[in-house]
Length: 266
Length: 227
Ligand SMILES: Nc1ncnc2c1ncn2[C@@H]1O[C@H](COP(=O)(O)OP(=O)(O)OP(=O)(O)O)[C@@H](O)[C@H]1O
Ligand SMILES: [Mg+2]
Image (cartoon, each protein chain N blue to C red):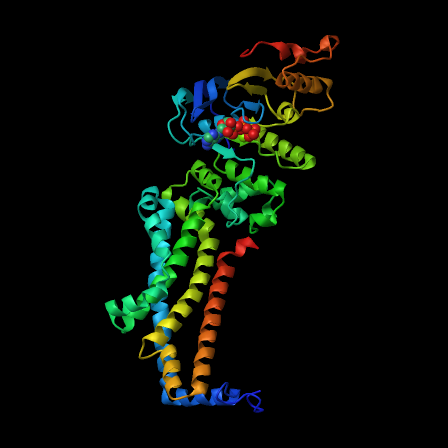
């Protein structure tokens, strides 16, 4: 018996608009995510990535448009979703165990223990967050999100503050947990390499809209040394910087690259 | 120095005399009676003022409408030194117990109020957003995030208010009372009992020290996560 036979959820974002005061941050954004898919969102700072995640989490109201979960319009808090934040947002006055138990019924200690074990922090359940390293804190935040068995995991730059090695480790952990449970995931990241390493599809948000929709056809586990991997990274970076990739990849005959220049929403 | 005669007894009595005065007053029962009444005033005034300050601080910190209605008026009242009200308070309550308790409560109220209010206002909004995202309801948000988040500030207010509490009590008991440590000292002055006066001062100092230690103890317990 697998306790994670819960599936991911299908997310349909249609013509979503969001204004703060007069400034329009999202200007009719469309995005379709299949259940169990892992989507990475990149874009310049301030382009509205966190705003989009907060809308999907139901923490804020949009001005126009709709977000549907398995066809049902989202109304209020998104109970199927759990969010992981860049700054962790652990409660400093709660021990690791109690942080993970946040919002759980009191008989769920076993599940919390299981989640903590999965992120490798079994020995630290009685410690306060101030005693943990940055990576360990994010592990706790991950456990806290996963213990609810979300069908949608929202990750807002959860690894941004970590050193390179810890990042790699956390990427693997997130990937393996996702492969095991198959929840739908949306990862916001500044790191294009991270996006290519972990996601099924990379989305670029510019000027309040999706301007790139790039499926990553690389088999898992992904090798960063794979030339195709670097090509994806290079191409997406080039798109972010609004220039064409300088190198000529036509020499590279690789079926994996076929979809690279596909139009948006293929 | 007063032992050796370097300081005349009229200025400062020798420690042995102070101890003797303490023993004498203990035997007659006067000391415990005065100490008891002072402690009672301090405690009751502290509880009334502290609870009122805490409740107002919570209400105004958490609810916007309460904030709009009450905060500015409380801030205005805060600017009046509460000891300046002593003549007025004596007119209202006479020199009975209620005047002392009222003054202590008033003195304690503001530091507790201000620190509770600011503690709540300065809570990281992101933590509250996180709590909502994890499905906490209003009560859970309050007890798991807002109250613990404001706790260190609230405790600062309480420790500060303990100082105000003793100060208020000393002044009130010295000016207008017929019992209590302050009265004992004033009474001793009339009979030139220097030893009793110094004893009173030492007792006040001890009270202050002990109450601060108790507050520190709770601080250590409640803010364990912070070190
Ligand atoms: N609560 C708010 N009130 C007013 N403006 C806001 C608010 N939240 C976000 N904004 C504005 O909306 C825009 C998008 O913010 P958002 O946080 O979504 O950007 P982001 O893409 O996540 O950036 P970063 O990569 O730096 O995290 C910014 O210009 C920001 O100033
Ligand atoms: Mg952001």
